[in-house]
Length: 115
Picture (cartoon, rainbow, N blue to C red):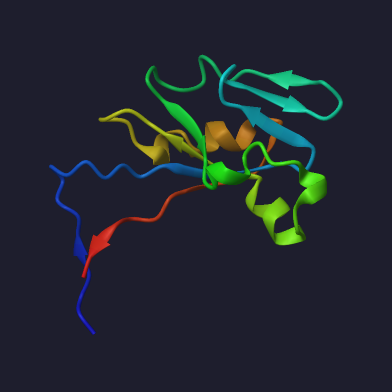
């Protein structure tokens, strides 16, 4: 087995905050807002630095009808990544994301290494 080699600091690999939505929530990419099934909304503006992005880990499931999905697909549909702009660390924002009422879990994404 080869030892791990960290990715170069000059590289463009960003470590995201990996998050999972609570069961009754979704993220509306176009409006940049979280919406619950009951109609409650949450806008994270101001909690993250400018140029941050929130994206689904499985974009093809983002707008799929949950009634037509298997249980594993429904679970995958709840996963997001918060991608921060250059110079910002996921470690500095993971607790902020955890505090959002729409988030069930949040962790710093894995460190990328080269073989």
